[in-house]
Image 1: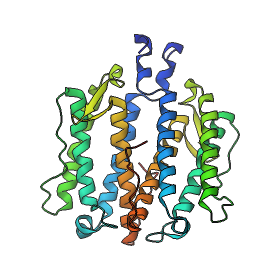
Image 2: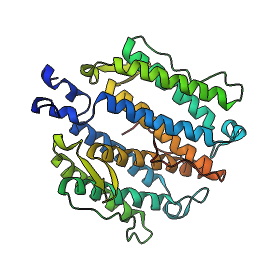
Image 3: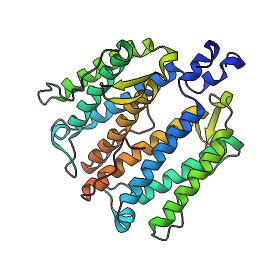
Image 4: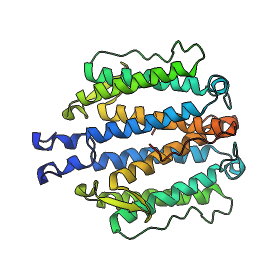
Length: 162
Length: 162
């Protein structure tokens, strides 16, 4: 706390929110890595999507969502990727997204976190609520990936290691 | 934003963090409700815990964790409850927890969010990182509950409805 006039700043800073998200993204990357190549693209439970499809949703949201916040240009929600059934192509896109987030996130002005926006031109919220949604959505779907891995008799990475 | 000296306050306020958490908790409550009585206590995938056991972990963390932050008295991690195999007993504990969080959370001083603590006497972090962990852990496990429901051919509540 620098001084009493900025004390509410101590709840969470933009840098902490970015670090928190990238910590989660690092864990999701390890969950992707934990899947065998074949099962990543084919395994599912109860008619749900494969973890490859879920991952493509996450990729479709993260970088385009942040870029949209920074540039103000409406992003298109695209949940597909020419992965050629190779996990390494998905991981490459994952790492490019990591860099894009690191590049764009710091450009969000602190006074903008409560600005009202429509993510992907349609989801109403604030900059903050949208970013929290991106993160929560990733945690939610990754939790599903944990069940997929367990059902394949594979030990997932520890949830608390970021 | 009240004035420029408090602009970093606009990232997230304690009130917003509380509302965010309780929004998630409301969704988790609906996931509990969606389970048939028997399957709530018995169904699992890949050797994982039942959703009743997972819920008891969440109950063991939330109110005791927040009380510990406010009072400074070390909390004991207790993941059991005398539920007598009745979902209504778990839901009752859930609602009591909701009230306890609403009572204790506002007592956290804003300047305390970056204070270093050991949750449950052992998990090192700050007040903020601990609360984010409580929330993330709930989202993570609830995501598992979604797979359990889908595998039982039950439609879970919408993730985005809080």
